[in-house]
Length: 367
Image 1 (cartoon, rainbow, N blue to C red):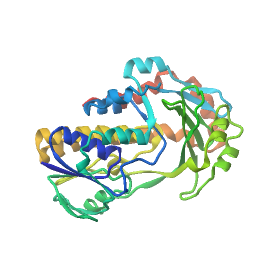
Image 2 (tube, rainbow, N blue to C red; image 1 turned 90 degrees about the vertical axis):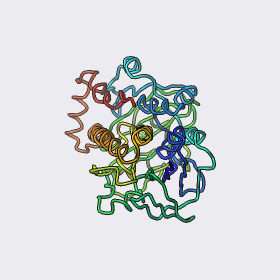
Image 3 (cartoon, rainbow, N blue to C red; image 1 turned 90 degrees about the horizontal axis):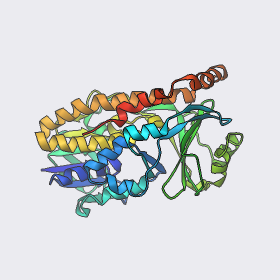
Image 4 (tube, one colour; image 1 turned 180 degrees about the horizontal axis):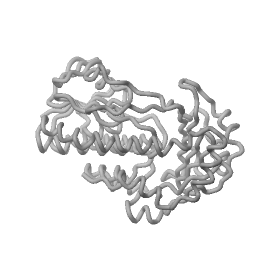
């Protein structure tokens, strides 16, 4: 059996590793000249680690150092609005790991035979019968996996009438600040803007910023420093220490809920199927879940029945996570002063277990 995987990011390489475990022939087609990831930090949450365990890679990632879950949410002046019971979360769900995205891609790549990797290959069309037209010719497979991201060629080829990505109203910046001590993983909310930070294993600090903005607008680091200058420590210090050349800005999109992720011999996974807002940090974790689930079901049941089972399991789960992510991030982007004043007053009154209940369906996944 042969699988052609379109896209060599986290989801695509995870799928390749999972099918390789099962003895499938592989081609992994990646448009970029090399298999790597341009990005900053990434929180691999307990469900993502369990998916990596299925690939035999979870302990390798844990060996670099585990991290704590989100400690909570603060206001711009530093007051805690939500304070999570971190120890309880770790006892119930297990550890988190925060890594650079490129490190996870490198790890996944080691689990895929080098002969299967085809960088510098531009996919031009995918057909439902398992044919892939690309810059090096044509490939045919028993299964094509569309792991080619938000603007998926696979999705546009096989489902040309489905709606495309929609802008959610805010843009996102990501950066890595030099090593320093920070108080775990924390988010801070303002009016229509938020800032988050999490320590990496080497003590550098992954930072992300999200702000309401017109689609396509661009903001330099100097402007961000000015905008956040009055926020609590260590927010200004982290921005002051950052290198302006290392700041990545991307508008934030999500996909409308698709009716299906499969057609004939083609399956979508990851952002190609269910791109979601980053509020729960579940994008990569859901791609990892997709990958190991798809390989297990197709290998066990055959392509037709396996794709039916994959669709039945993954569509409701991933779309539930996408909904929860949208809802979780929405209050951070309220911009009315009276509404945000009310938000900041009410959040500290909520029970601590509210966060735990909201994330439990994501974290308790198992294959």
